[in-house]
Length: 199
Image 1: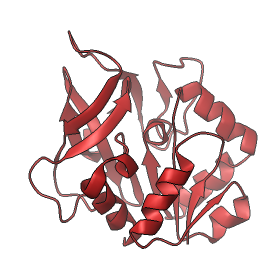
Image 2: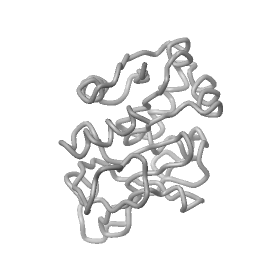
Image 3: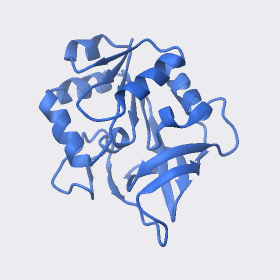
């Protein structure tokens, strides 16, 4: 079973529908025992970094999530669900992230381009379990103004370009996360979700 964590933010039903479409047995839940029983967990996120952390803290699930990740359970963060894996963000300077990864989330330096970055962008990736079976530089759908700047650059598994090089995905051991929305990215996004389901 894959648990999609419900903490009041994120495109829960569109993500759940996409995961089910690629063969995942998915359940939307905010119950700690469901997260503990799950084979994998998905952490969505839409909106401001600080609001996401506030909502997540209000559920009381942070210790459970941290413990399950530490114990090796596979997790997929999506959009702000990626960002809150880091220590903090320029968007919400007074809010601490989960600190699963070292580093900071900062505003995109897009030059003359419009921020937020909204729309389809090509993604370049290396040797990554999430992108298995994909080739070239496929296009994924983004909606964000901030991106992760990891302390350990080796965890960056994919990038895009929007005025600067932007972190599109990170990966380390059992932890996976995408800045783009796989559930809104057509066939290539479904492939990313299928790869996670089949890990």
